[in-house]
Image (cartoon, rainbow, N blue to C red; front, side, top):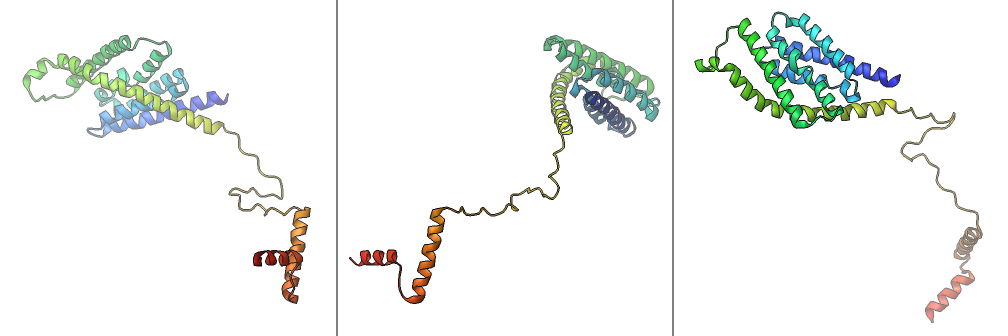
Length: 242
């Protein structure tokens, strides 16, 4: 039950973060690429616990919420997230679960990415006035998107797989910390010694050597006061003279 609650909390956090980042990307000029990037990373949180169903629900909820935060009027900016970026982490997770060959998976995902980018270009061209640096680029726009998109996606997919590993590591670390049992408090009347500074000094053993040493010290002090020395001290002095 605790594991399921943690996964649900990750899904809710994923939806909230993705909505925030995508809302910023939609409404702030020239920030939509950053919104895609961080929104995609936010979708990885439930996948850190293999909660794929929660990741899909977070994707649906985030897409609907983004429509309410300006996504309808600027749908061409939200479309790439709905068509590709929001689902890409989930597809990568399924790829790892079923051990799909990475080159086969890359080919399929590259076609998917190019198709989504071509669809985004068509919506963008229909909703806005497009001005390109050269007139010939407009005629060859889809071909340029396919060629350039495949090259860009190669590095993007590699980066997202590494990001997922990092997210998995942080999620596992947070889960371990949350699962630790609290340390039992010390018994009543006792204070926990954290630094080892309150420990009492070790007491000397009451053995014959210790008692003999104490007597020898007392004899030495008496000899100093009376001007005489104990027998042992006198023998050591005479040995030194010889």
